Image (cartoon, rainbow, N blue to C red; front, side):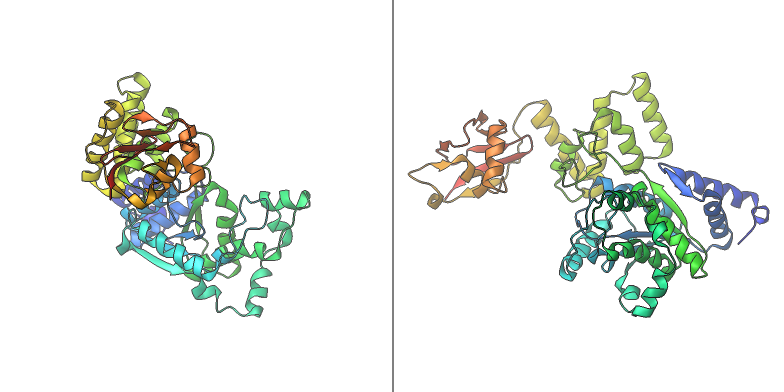
Length: 418
């Protein structure tokens, strides 16, 4: 490892620059001085750091909350380092017990493979594929024999495992903990041993697992990785962690109008956090925005529209961002119908004496996933035909060619009868 005093002034300046980028939006680096030494060695030798992120493919669609750590990976790539992206096809069959009050359902091999392919498709919307190597941890975990598994498990005590909050809570309350759950952090840590990772990233809820990598690398005589913890980002409700199960998320693979419209629901007090953690805005631009919002020279609405546009641009391109913004202005600010409403075909066979239940109409057109969902939307006053609100979920309507069907603020369809 190169010593600080052996670096030139220019190299020392570059190390400081990289550390400033790395520290942005980070909660904790363990240990920071060790990471700085690793960066210094990379600058001096030209050998990039190997930066690891493990993905447990249990929920395949990536949302803005997931991208916090992906942006940090992208920053490492822009600094010249390499990304080790690990698809946990082996660990995914167990499921990460972090934060869980009960044993998670194990995924099938088919589930894992399908979800992993979806991840890979979406991940390159952020990461540079030329600087990303994708691994499947079944490559080294699958061939391990039982003797090797016993050797691995002997590296860590049960007392150490019970230091994890979720395990401790379950143990003290008498809730079951299966032995195989102890192997999840062991296997994630062993990934770092197998790949000789220099740095591992994860959310603050992953601290135990990340530090396990350091522990096992040391036990196996490897150089220990630095661990970087990024914050968890609140969802659109402004309270809970962004989650698909809570419905407070923005998916990066959603339609541009959906991304833009959802982004406009972000609470004002969280805008800076979203900009800092989930966009490519520079530190200088971020400082200017923070100052403008504080002194009133920047209106929160304008800042939020810029954020919405940024998200659409990042995942669908500049042209889609312009169109989504115009759509929002037209529909929501001017209270007008959009110009580009898609046709939706309704067969005469679906009608009963020229009428159809509103719930059946919405599900037949694919505007609602189920009758119960359609019923809730009507009850919430979210359904309109030709801008007239439908208030009775049991209502039968008489559709006509060219009718404009609307659900909520973002779903429109122009009826075509056949």
